[in-house]
Amino acid sequence: MLYITSDHGGLKLKNRLVEFLKQNDVEFEDCGPNKLITNDDYADYVIPVMRKVLESPVNNAILICRNGVGVSIIANRFKGIRCALSWNVLHAVSSRNDDDSNVLALPADYISENEAENVLEGWLNKNFSKEERFVRRLNKLEEIK
Image 1: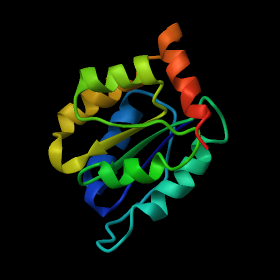
Image 2: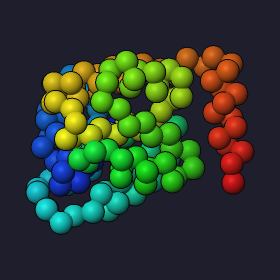
Image 3: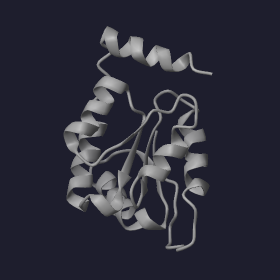
């Protein structure tokens, strides 16, 4: 399952990407917010979504805030989450191919809506390459305590 969430700063872009996902028949769950709450905290949305992602290895998520940094920092606190902050198609695709990213963070203030759609589409359509060197590197992450 694909989950999508944002804070107030990413709400407009999230809503645009929700429509994009619907138009492209992508199965997803919109985890809010559903209205603008100007003093909300991204952690209140990201934490429950990361728990959902960790329920199954096939789950992924899209996180959006103004610069993408806050949501990516909190996401990467969870063991098993590999969140990539990206605003470029090639970069996002590389994060899947090389690093098996299972969460994509987007910076609403630094990416156009059209580019965000392109980044999301590229990220969704790329799978982990499973090259030995990339697998070896990811295995070292699992050893961190």
